[in-house]
Image (tube, rainbow, N blue to C red; front, side, top):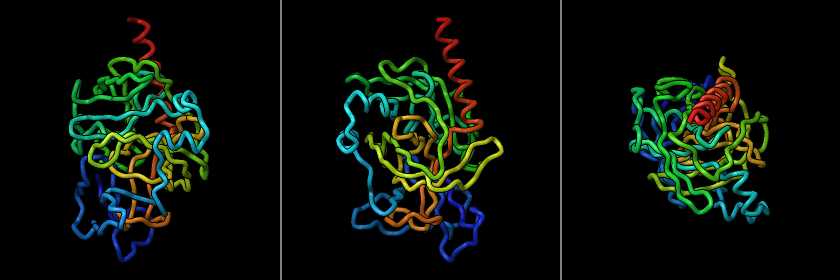
Length: 296
């Protein structure tokens, strides 16, 4: 993860530094930053992990609870939100999802690559796992065929922290998400599959895309969101309420990580929109994957 001062956001630096981090379930690590740039505070009474960025209160729901609140049948839940799963790559644990095809994975680049740009794992040591129709499936990620914003995401702007990669085979019985365009401001659903410590834990949260903080020359937008997140959520889909893939979660900026607070530009989570180069990469990898499947 990266830790940088508030000045890197283009605003006036406050007295307190602000932690900027990428969210993996393998702990918070600061790279190339002075000790003063990291502010660690005691957890609230909820005993939050230090990587947790909670806006106002923790509104994440289990899939069953979300289904009841939204009034959705099991079939509707599977159709809208069933393409999310856990990515385990080396010692890292994050979230990923099938997009465009049932053998194409989208996640955050830092879930797959080390700070030095090396794959965290290959073959059986880098997998996508999910359960569909009562069947547990585990498929290897073909990390050497990745199309991504950056292979060394820790040293690059966060807007490059995305990866589209083929799987070694299809995930059966899962309807992949299809990409769409995020409206900002607008309603989204954050679909995560893991929590801090590498714990597999599926959650859904209705929340909002609040503000575009950066637009890259590639066309990808960085968007501040008021969803709740912690380690293990990296790579999670930002979906429309109908299950359209609008982008992915990659990290947070906060002056007080691990402590509940209102949404502000010094305490928020953020993700990347499925626009520009990311959308083009999805199309490229899906086309390649379909061609390969047809030739078998």
